Length: 590
Image (cartoon, rainbow, N blue to C red; front, side, top):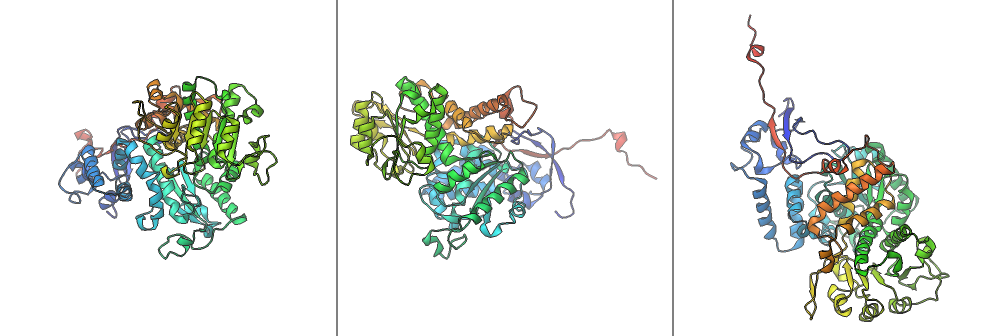
């Protein structure tokens, strides 16, 4: 109500606290200026029918809610009933996003109750559909839209966002949304979904996350001619103006939120992705998930596979189908890991062969960019992947070019002929773009293939009764744990060492039982535990190498990180009510 003084509420938290060096003060009084109807409209505070009668009376919301008191578990059941009534994935996505807008804690309780079930809805593949329909699905602000016309005023625009303590930003310019191409302003669904996974899988506090879309126009003709499109209706601005916008954005963010603010680049076009990563990686706290996250999860799968092949990484020879962001990221991390084993960079490069749309990447081939040049082999040109596999005889093939069926029957049979246990990674998304299916790999390699995919595949049973559960190399194993670790100790720059540590941590969580079933990754339902372990390893590494910002160094790193993990348990809002001694409270009379 107007004119009222703020209520001081005693907040009893489950395990909730803030990330980034400032743990929650359990049981301290919290000044909540909101009261009455505003409380029910604020997703951070709203508990719906879980408010107790005492809370309803004290907060001035009694009568605004039905006369019913529910536990959070019952609320989850209500959400699930509504969710299951929806017949398609896009409607299910909208149910979850509406819940996020209404009751944040309940949204994360639902997500964490069955992460394997909800991840394909809040992120790939359903988020792609949602982005295509984003103009129609847009309900209320979930992030910042910064346009090319705001150049010179980004610092002012950041003030529009209500939260001050931002620790993690996911930013996209909408040019290469998943495999869907240029979606312009509709790309906002990606940072929103990604940051929901920061919280659900990693425990990063949602109020410390900011999704950003940089709208510089779109080259998508269908959107430009659509009267319902919600972004700038002109062709993409490129070159100097574009670079100045990104420069200003990076500077404005760090000026406002500090040098430790994590900025993750997401779904930028290939050329910009590499360029911006190289430009900013040593100046800001930044990484590109499409390049480095993909690399980390792929290398984690390779490390797990080494326990089956029972040899060293440097004993392997890799052929990549594709030479874009993902391929380069994976190849660079493999090089690092091989060098760690003790072989020279020069020898390591000889073990990595790349095939792009023009065939094998070899020395002397025209129009090779700087990235491809590094992996050009001294070999006559070869046009097809089948021929390359025949000539190179790799121990592992990795598909990252989104060409469905690229791993043909002949290639898979050849891999099985050359190797006792061939490694076959079909990492392209979505499932329709996979280089081969899990069933094809296991059948054509007689059950000897070591398979991982980018999209989920169901279990495969061969005629001889062997059953395999294919591993999914999902980046969600990587970025939530990396974000939690980096934020927890205030790392300034995210080096590739962090992604190698992450790959080793993920592989270490794979049990012998998992490997026997064909799984190269830990079960997705253990992702919160995996993320915590990654974060602890990163914190440990950062303090050892003098790269952490928060001091004094915590003695128990695991306890330190655990205290920072967001909990979806409800806070308890009850006024701190107490009495003075009667004599001290006596009213003085004339």
